Structures are given as structure tokens and as C-alpha cells.
Amino acid sequence: MQIQKIHHVAYRCKDAKQTVEWYGKYLNMNFILAIAENEVPSTKEPDPYMHVFLDAGGGNVLAFFELPTKPEMGRDENTPAWTQHLAMQVATVDELLETKAKLEADGIEVVGPTDHTIFKSIYFFDPSGHRLELAANTGTPKMAKMLDEAKWDMLNEWAITKKAPQHARWMHDGSYAGE
Image (cartoon, rainbow, N blue to C red; front, side, top):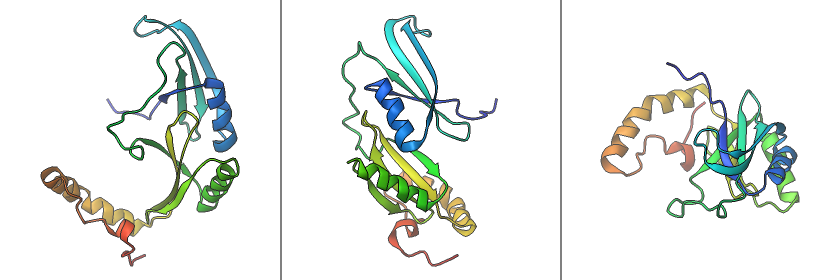
């Protein structure tokens, strides 16, 4: 068996209609499907829900569940807010900056652009509190080769020491001096 692609990624949302409208307005995602039931098909649990699906481009689908009978949404308080996020690629840094301006014009706080050397990105939260990242690739084939050659050494060192290996620190410390 080989995974062909991710069929969809699903998150919980506070308000399905607000979510569909927000992702359409800021990220140009089209609303493609709604499913609503009073019983969960997989578990048969009686629980009404609205399940909405958005076109995230390139055959990718982002979905959300509104669950009105459940306690208010929360997040894992033991995990920093910056950790769990959904990163989506845009074509250019200009598109990244245009989206940043649009979000900020409506009072949405945006962090970045952050320069990761191989890509630049911005970070912000949707109305349900999910952290999102938009990234525009800026890397070169040489950078990709350097990272590929270091990945196993980095992972193996991390597994033993639990300290950040220094093989790719050039991504954030400004020391990359190549093509």
C-alpha cells in the first residue's frame, strides 16, 4: 500500500458559516461540500454536526466540524501555541505580503514575514484559534541538497541528546553564503 495523497484534513471550528466565509475571504478557498447528520456515521454516536469542506488548491481539501452540543473548543495547554499549525504554500513572496496586508487591514494580527532561508512565511490565527502559516519557497537546489544530506545525522543526534543539532542552523542565523 502507498498513500496517494491526503484526502482531507479536518479540524473543529466554532462556527461553520463564519469559517467558510473567513477562508473564502482571506485565503480564496471555495466552499465545496457540506455534510450534516444527527448521528456520527463511524461510531453511531447521537451527536449533530455540520462538516464543511473547502478547496485548498492543488487537489487539497481542508474540512471543519462544528459541534454545537460539545463543550467550547480548547487547545492542548501543554503545547505552545506556535507548535500546532497548518502551513499552506503560496506562489510568491509578493502574494504572501498581499495577504498579510489584507489580514492586517481587517485587524488580524500577523507575525512575519519570517525568513527561514528556504522559504518566507507569515503566521496568524483563524476565528476558531487555529494557527495558520502561509509560506513562499525561496530555497535553491543547493540548499535542498544540504538539508537532505544532513537530515539523518540531525535526527539521530537529536534522538540521543534532545539538543538542537547545528547542521542546518544556517537557515536562521544568517550564515548561509551560497547559491
